[in-house]
Image 1 (cartoon, each protein chain N blue to C red):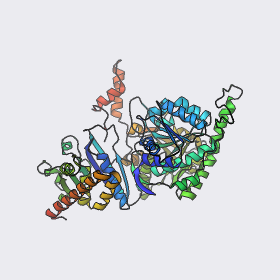
Image 2: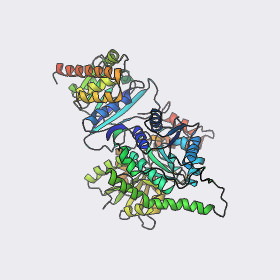
Image 3: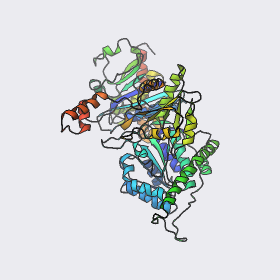
Image 4: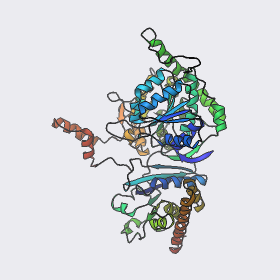
Amino acid sequence: MLKQMEGSKAVAEAVGLCRPEVICAYPISPQTHIVEALGEMVKSGKLTPCEFINVESEFAAMSVAIGSSAAGARSYTATASQGLLFMVEAVYNASGLGLPIVMTVANRAIGAPINIWNDHSDSLSQRDSGWMQLFAETNQEAVDLHIQAFRLAEELSMPIMVCMDGFILTHAFERVDIPSQEQVDKYLPPFDPRQVLDPAEPVSIGAMVGPEAFMEVKYLAHAKQMQAIDLIPQLANEFKQQFGRDSGGLVRTYFTEGAETIIIAMGSVLGTIKDVVDEMRAEGHKIGVLGIISYRPFPLAEVRAALVNCKRFVVLEKSLAVGMGGIVATDVRMAVTGTGIKGFTAIAGLGGRSIPKSSLHSLFRQAEKEELQPVTFLDLDWDVVNKQLEREKLTRRSGPIAENILHDKGIVSAKFG
Amino acid sequence: MFQIRVHGRGGQGVVTATEMLSVAAFEEGRHAQAFPSFGSERTGAPVVAFCRIDDKEIRLREPIMEPDALIIQDPTLLHQIDVFAGLKQDGYVLLNTNHSFEELGLADILKGRKAERFCTLPANEIGKKHIGRPIPNVPLIAGFAALSGMFKLESVVLAINEKFSGKIAEGNIAAATEAYNLVKEQMKESGHA
């Protein structure tokens, strides 16, 4: 049914339709309306049988999800930013134990400096945690990916993060088609766990594993993500047949055929990029877009196939590997090894910096002429950066950087608008 | 694409206003995207929220920097921030005040613009009368529907009924109706209806 609604509420409805049996969450910022709405559904009896467990921290949220999933309950939680970092030890345990938990990450920056706004630093910090990560471009895709995520996680017995841009998607009101319970039930069978703590057939989960078997267990986690490379497109196909929509999959191309320059990105910024590409195409530019939906597993072959005929690409990412450059860009460059295609990295939108069309127009035009540096920081204010560098050169006690920058920019406190 | 920027203060229902604008547009079969300028909301602090309306899917995610229309929920903002920044030359402005643009010293803003697209509305008073509180957002949405002709009063009523129920919905519908008619009357008086 078509509805005009907030992204968080739409995801809450989708998760509710997936019949989770345990939802655990820590109800403090950084948290979204998703678990708030799910809490209301459980309390009102609309979502039953389901237990909503109000935990004392994010670490506890993931620990409860591990326990409930191991006990055979379909388990869900949501987090973002510092909340994700606080649960990290348990995040690795969930994947190490092979428990099919689904978690929404409403992507946000990581402090310090304190910042509540959107970028991809949080879930990308968990790149190697063994969790799968799918990125939604729109709220419709966020809804659809959650439905697919439970199938995928339970099929492989591995956890998955559904990543959606915090604020930009979670707080946006837009048109969303919410499927019916019958449709979702037909697509997503009841949870049939590969391992379960059952008093009738006792097992232990979580053995200590020494050097003689540790690598094999870890390899199997990798092997499962390699299986997901095949399974993700299958599930997206099946989804399309049942729901009539293209959602999910590994990658999505837009005018890449015959494109000399291809822009690569993840999440909601793809929409703005596509609008810019439409405008540039109308002027005769040979430019296209490659959206990466599945960040983990990373679809090396599909990315290579999409890029192999272009002359150059730009990875525009909302994340930064300090001391290195791009995070997504590193994987993309791996995918095109040996092709000689020129790759550029553009770091953009950190901490909620807006990514306007005008900036993308000039970035893409520079890329076409191959005038970009290997790593570019979109719309960086070089004046304040250079001023601080100069200050550090001149004064030993140059003071706290964030405070200095705010002072130089004439900002009393963080503002918006 | 038609882009609306709403300025107000924390507590005035600025974000709700854009959400309801998007629902009203959706009710008429159009695509709409509403989003706040994100931040930690505090009562009384300047707040901005946005709404885009189009006949096709809206993919753009940048803030609205060149609005087709402005809804200003608090005239005291005019002295604090440049609410008119980027407003298109033929843009609409609906201002919550019981003064005229001239009385507020805004005659210069109107120069070279379409005066019939500028309108004031005593939305606080209308809110107070029908809802019991000086919340201007719903009267302003309805007033904007009248001023711009973007959507019908009935669609605003549908949006109200989706957001509120019972007495609060009734009060808001009465407020919306009065605001809608008031703006229509003003337009008639100035001979532009």
